[in-house]
Length: 199
Image 1 (cartoon, rainbow, N blue to C red):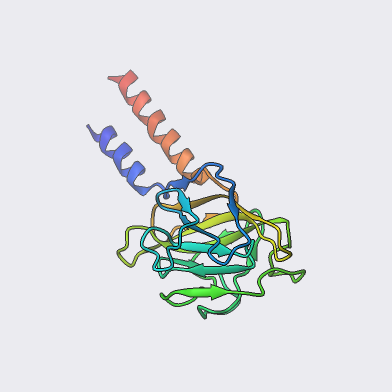
Image 2 (tube, one colour):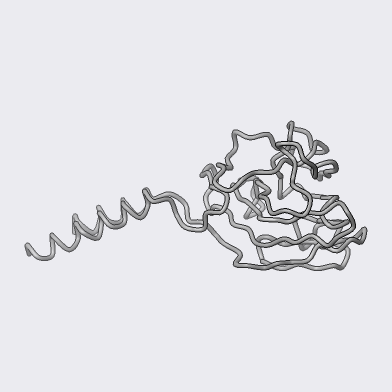
């Protein structure tokens, strides 16, 4: 019985799981409406959802324009809902220490270019964000892999992932729990097996 309690205690202390969308490769049209993406329910639509009743982020003009709901707050150059969204690289940590806009609808322009914090035109990069997963004011960290274009070409939302626990950081491109949680689970299972052999 003591062993079972230890296993349960270790399982509860484990870091958050990472929720992954799977490969989506959603085209971003060059139209004004573009595409509205629901990262929670893994759906997208080209039908206008500017009130964000069934989506959290809108990419348009191939990704040269981005519009966000209060539920999804992208990493920005400064904490303002109209500041440019900044590009993250593979392996970057996304957490609450970064600059995000306030809890409000926001937009972004001038986020594509050759600057270090800009998205490469026509190249893959990552968009970090905070997501109000359960609409309770508690935000989880996440990332989205995108190819954005400002030259009249179609962009792409490739995939995304987010933590299921507020306050837990995520690493761009990572879709498995942190190695520490795997270690703790292995330790707990090993302890359980040893105690059963002794009994």
